[in-house]
Amino acid sequence: MLRLLMVAQETEALAELRSEIALNGFACSIVPHVEGLAEEVITHRPDLLLFEVGGNLSVSDIQEFVQGMKGARRLPVIALLPGDTLDSLNGNLDIDDFITSPYDVHELVLRARRVLSRARNIDGGELIKCDGLVIDLAKCEVNLEGEIVELTFKEYELLKFLASHRGRVYSREALLNKVWGYDYYGGDRTVDVHVRRLRSKIEDAKHTFIETVRNIGYRFKA
Image (cartoon, rainbow, N blue to C red; front, side):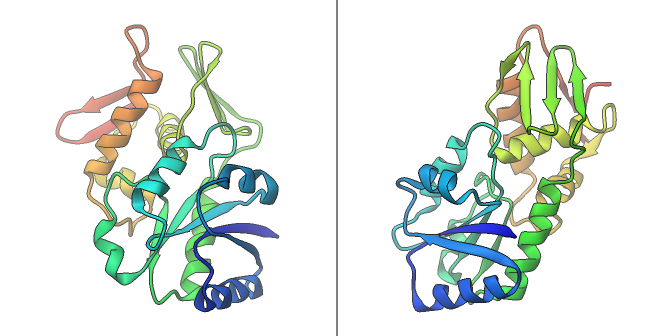
């Protein structure tokens, strides 16, 4: 059974949502805040995290935790957004999807399954190698010259996608579609931000992997 971990203040409405999620084939636990969340992740071993923005949980809280996720457990994230907090969402928030209240369980389950399908669309034994860079698709790990590179979930997904299509140019809009999802809320500047962060982690004077194609987008070098 797939496991979800919801980070939110438990209310009657969320308790009902959790019950409905369970009826749709997911196990779902609720924790009230990000403090100690890393330990909860180890305990519950979820496949996906749900964060409700608002109350005692802000966008910056989510961003801080997501950026702090390290190692193989790069968990996909869906934000639950009360309608009056939609404006707080921005293109720099490293999430995979979101829904707005009132939360519809069928929409949530559909989005969760789609996000998990993208995250797990890997060949268990395959390695992608290029000039000292190794992407282990089975372990969801990236190594550069033998040293593990700590990436966020979305940075890893972006690198994996580009490296799996070496030499092919993708526009920012295409990358938003392929990596973030066709209905991602945010502009194509999100792609530029993630490419810049990714380059800062895997490139230096000796290594160049992601090339900018002027006025079009990006490609992983052939």
